[in-house]
Length: 319
Image 1 (cartoon, one colour):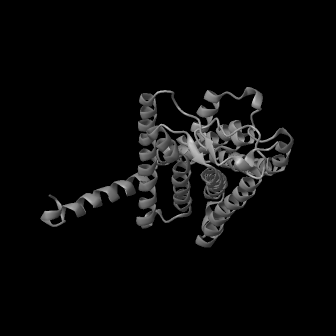
Image 2: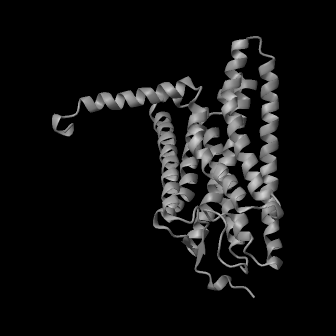
């Protein structure tokens, strides 16, 4: 007998049993969240304000920063609030909204990372055609396709997930409403109804992954044929941040969504979900700006300009 109609809220996983440890986790998540806001906010502002960064690569990086901000803002604030107020509850509607937003932002980011691999492929393998293949209109269309595909997949997956009858109670073994954990609560006979949606997602993800691998095979072949060692290093350092982000994103995401339930442990699931949902938005700005002199110079210029402007403010505003 289904009890999904009587469920009005879900209970998320508590990080600790004591209030003191809950406060500690709140401080940890607050630090990570503020770091993500600062890093991605700096990238957004620098790319938007500096005309030298108005190129396809930085346009896609701006979109990635927006998605990262949305992704971490979907899960972390609720986890922080639960830790601070020592509660586990999230409403049924709030859980559905969290699932939709997370799936939308997560799948859109994966699509955008695929587009960014194409950008790197054209820049290194077809530099003479870069302007024609990646004009402003083409970039806008590719970014819109990434965001649009995320919306469609999230709608499909969320509607199908929450149409399943729930027989396993309302306790979600995760710090946010994660689809695999919600599917564990569904009745065994209805679980297969969601298999076709998972298969569609797996096929689309596999196609994107194959495209990324093909792009990087061509990129590395082109780089190794470069006569200049300095040019090889520059090309490698341009691509390595993106490759690292894709690897972290794909490996942890696949492990979270495709692993058998027989090897599922709460502590392990929590760590994997933390790695693919919280860490990328926080570390992506650091990864992409670490060896990017243009971006670092733009951020320094923006920050120094803010301080110079503050020196020109009226005296009463400095008090």
